[in-house]
Length: 454
Ligand SMILES: *[C@@H]1O[C@H](CO)[C@@H](O)[C@H](O)[C@H]1NC(C)=O
Picture 1 (cartoon, rainbow, N blue to C red):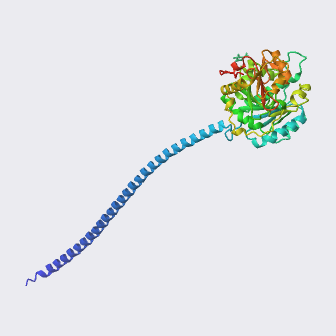
Picture 2 (tube, helix red, strand yellow):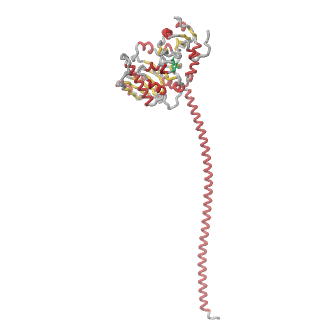
């Protein structure tokens, strides 16, 4: 045996041990890294899985977004169609209501103004009568009292009614009188009217105004009558105002509460005009006698008024500016309508110019002609059982006839009271109609047919 090897063996052993230790260390480090790599790979896989998941989720969401967008578009189309349908129905409803004379809900038909001055007791009576029928329709017919001057008692009455909006015209502007003998009242009234209408149309922007005076009572269907006729002022520009008054409305001359006529003669007394007509009148408004001015053809320019057969206002003002004998003869016997008329269901299309003229002419042509020359024309009219017509060819002839029957004789600017194309119509002993007419009346009405020959 070689002895030498003892030291070397120890060295070798030590080296071997060292080597093994190093190997073991290396192995430990290696396996540590292997573990970490494995976990990194695992993490990466997890990430990829999550990413896939997200992509899946995203694309399925994307699909839903597209589906929702399509749904939205579909609903929008449907909505547009429905909107069109609704509009269509609304339009139809509106025109149905218009043809039935029902004003669309929530709309004001007209402001109503009572012109007052210095008669507190009259004003109170008028207000009580008006409010009786105005309160249920107050939203459509806002009520005003306009006082001319400063009489305290009148103001107290007006302000005593909470439903009323009080207006006051203090005036004071000089009267433009042409003749010192004239009554101031006519000038004050005209300037008060101008002031009140300016207030309502121009300051408060109403599109229609109904004017009453402080000595009137109204019929139960007063407001329905104006509501039912209001469309005509927009549709038929040959009509400038609607009145609730018939000058020949005394009880012996009226019969049918539903009858309405066109007229060339401004009746006044409870009447409605539009802002459009007002704008035409305002710059030319006269200093006095405004109602007679409105009766001039130069003011109305060939256009007409609407009047009922049976009055919807009753004038109780015996102590007015121009009354007395006139009151007893013409105003006191007026019949105030007391029959319920269902204006909302009535078709008033017959009032349009062309149709009215045609139908009015046909009725006149069918009436029995009586000679004007005979003194017993009233008896003859009474003895027949049908409508009659009597011609007049001059103002004097008309006045003679009117006197015989007791209707108004008065003319203004070539037009008898209530006349339309020269025709004055009234009832006689009930239902029978009597027509006074000019030789050219039927022609003016556009009559083309044959008069019934007898
Ligand atoms: C009334 O006025 C109109 C229009 O201004 C006119 O066409 C018509 O001839 C006039 N009528 C009379 C009777 O003067």
